[in-house]
Image 1 (cartoon, protein in one colour):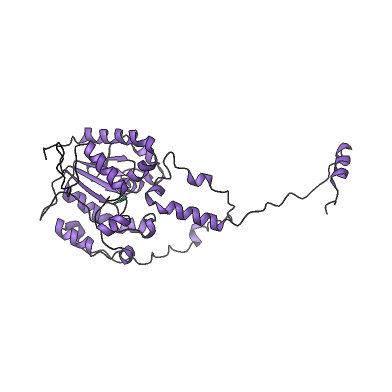
Image 2 (image 1 turned 180 degrees about the vertical axis):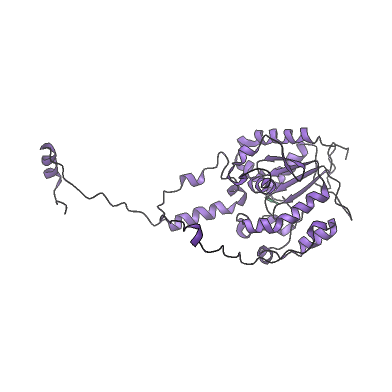
Length: 307
Ligand code: URA
């Protein structure tokens, strides 16, 4: 029972040294479901932004209203139900590991191994200098995350704003997109650009681990056939995908901590850097990205030919 005392009575009792028990104030937790959803949606709008949660200067979620979530106790492992099958997963085409470049292109174009095939307009295999039976002869492989809306429409990676920045980064290194008709003196079309996922995740959401796993053999075969001298992994998803077998618990390591060293994927040196979409928002990190490009250029000096 609590005493129904007014302010004056409480003051008198306090003066008398009498402590009056009161029930603790009940925290009124606003129903923030809408707020959470809208934060999640705005975070999803630029999927690449979301890919940088572990990176510096990314703080939109920190400003979100504090929300109480029910404490859900994880069931002990023994009683946990088996993981639900991810809807929409189908077998990949057989024999990817032996495919030629054209066969790999055909396999990706017809891939129905995950549900992304339902919503994509085009698959995005990658772009480089013209190739026929053999893979294009390139020293550099750039790996991004996944096609966005523009890339899905164009069937080509990095054609939006982030792509323009990527093209400028390449030019700064003496590299030029393989299908760029502009005559650019002092650059070489010595680069292939692709993504971890070959299909666009709807609404630019993050790639799902099951989708990444389904797509991984395509990227692996691309690397085997291209035999690049250096791979530049742009952003968290590219880094995690390429380094999952060589860096323990790579999923727990912030992208910034994977930078500044030379990793390896299938024996090819890998340098990790920020995703261009992140750099568009975080201009201060462009200098760090340039450091990464310099590191990569030290590993694989670009062969520059006159255009
Ligand atoms: N972001 C990526 O990671 N890849 C693209 O192709 C476009 C945007």
